[in-house]
Length: 157
Image 1 (cartoon, helix red, strand yellow):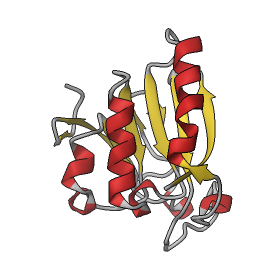
Image 2 (tube, helix red, strand yellow; image 1 turned 120 degrees about the vertical axis):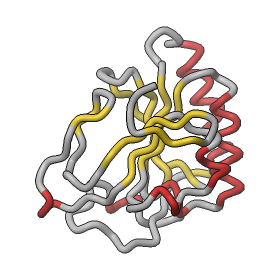
Image 3 (cartoon, rainbow, N blue to C red; image 1 turned 90 degrees about the horizontal axis):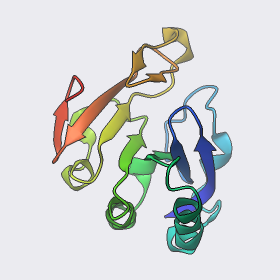
Image 4 (tube, one colour; image 1 turned 180 degrees about the vertical axis):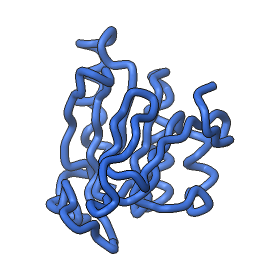
C-alpha cells in the first residue's frame, strides 16, 4: 500500500493520509483521479517518520487521522490493517473514507481499528449531502457512521 500525500485540515484538526489505488468503478468527476494508480507515492512505512514528525511538532492540533484515496478498501488488507494498528498507537480518532456503498462490504478487522467510516461513492447527480460529525458530505448518498469496537452506530455515542 502506498501513500501519495499527507495534508492537514484545520476545521477537523486532522492529518489527512491519501493512499493510492482504486480498482473502480471510478466516480464520474472523481476529486482524486490521480490516485487511481496503485503505483503513485511511496510504501506506507516510508511515511512513518513524517507522520511521527507531524504529531511530535503539532500534538495539540492533530486530533484525528483521516484516510482518503484512491480507495482505502482496495488496498491489501494486511497493509491497511498494519497501518491502522500503528496509527491507533497515537491515540487519535481514525476516520476512513470509502466509496463502497454498503457497510456489509467493510472488513471486520478494519472496523475494529477505526472510529468513523464514510461510505458512498461520489454521485454528482444526487446533489449535496448532509453534515455528519461536522463534515459536509459531497453527495446525498454518502453517510458517516461512528464505530466503536467494530460496532457501527448511526448516531454519535
